[in-house]
Length: 268
Ligand SMILES: C[S@@+](CC[C@H](N)C(=O)[O-])C[C@H]1O[C@@H](n2cnc3c(N)ncnc32)[C@H](O)[C@@H]1O
Image (cartoon, helix red, strand yellow):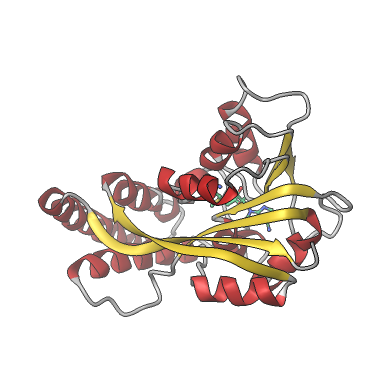
């Protein structure tokens, strides 16, 4: 199967709303940030990390295009000691022997499917030696796998399934999100204790709807079956219109949750 196309990785990537990072700051309290690892970097997380009083930071991405975007986003504030690293967590050599006071895994788990499928259950154990004091995991509760039980749930579910169908037809791997309980269970199984966990309700806006439908167009352009591509394209526009109407009427689509989990390595 083809690798995911990384050129528009940023469009696929969810970005933490400010209240999630505020919660992380609250949990951190007076603890110094020290050295920070942004283990699944992107423009949202690196802008936040680079705004903190850190000793140094390292930002890891699996996608070259993402590395360029991150580099551009922090060009004005990046110090000599700050690094952007292109690599894969499935590679044991990546940052081997390094340790960071604070590690952030911001929407990393859901994206693993595109870079190292089946590696998800090993991710936290892989990060464990890199975590000196705190690991913060930010993620999205799965929304394409549950039967929808409200109009808001249905439209988000339909958009998610439509997007993933287009990615699969184009030979790519959609993201795969995991519930907070899975995260907690795997943190404990990987040598961490969980010190806090909270879910945050999501209100989807037009930006989400447009980005999800728009990212399908280049995928559909690759299909040799043009009848199928045209039908899917029309389906995408119908979904867009329904979703944007709902957003106009209700000021957003309230559905689902993000989560933040804070954990510390056992034995420190
Ligand atoms: C959804 S994005 C993260 C969003 C980002 N924190 C932001 O604020 O925009 C996922 C990130 O994790 C990286 N990633 C996913 N799987 C990876 C792997 N196996 N090894 C290294 N990086 C990976 C992707 O390349 C990307 O940089």
